[in-house]
Image (cartoon, rainbow, N blue to C red; front, side, top):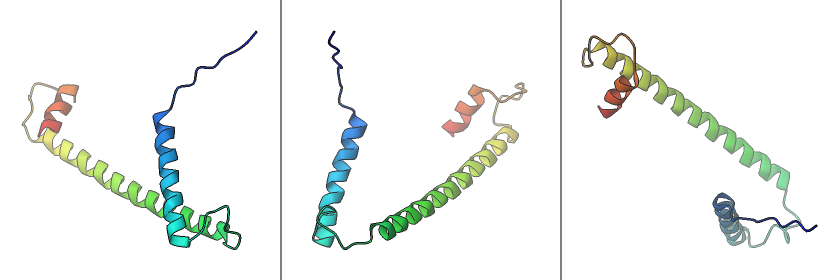
Length: 103
């Protein structure tokens, strides 16, 4: 019994492959060598630096996301208290959110 797997190209993987290829070209331009040919570099130190940079980016993004979320909650709370919405509604509904985000 023969099994054939139908494989479809994954666009996400293709984008990552393209980015890896571009990074390789940039690295060869910057350092004048490929990773395969480079025998004297301290890969672990470079990796550590890159991961620490990544941790800093994550922290900054979380901070910005937290401020944005708090600001949106405050604006929505002010909207609910402002009387701009239908006063006979006792609960926040999808209509309230749609009206708020249309502001």
